[in-house]
Length: 104
Image 1 (cartoon, rainbow, N blue to C red):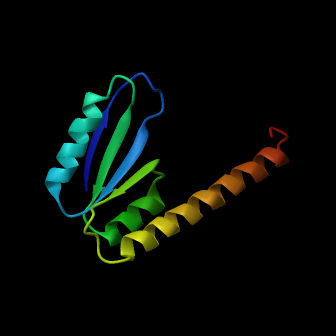
Image 2 (image 1 turned 60 degrees about the vertical axis):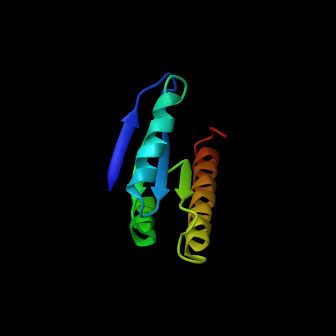
């Protein structure tokens, strides 16, 4: 796993996960994020496999997940579906807590 961070005006960084085997993609994406770093804080992580990505997604929330085009058949789509369900469940949980504490 590789990690790169860039500070910027935005107080909360965008967490980006790149899923794929190519190291050069990680460095290219990091360079792009750094060029735009003045207006967008970003943290970039790299998972070399879908299994590693699944583990990382359980451990941390990501605002953007990028897959290499040649990801293994439909596995990337299945992982993306899993992420989407996880995000919807968290959103519902936050709404329930907000109602419970009267902050909604």
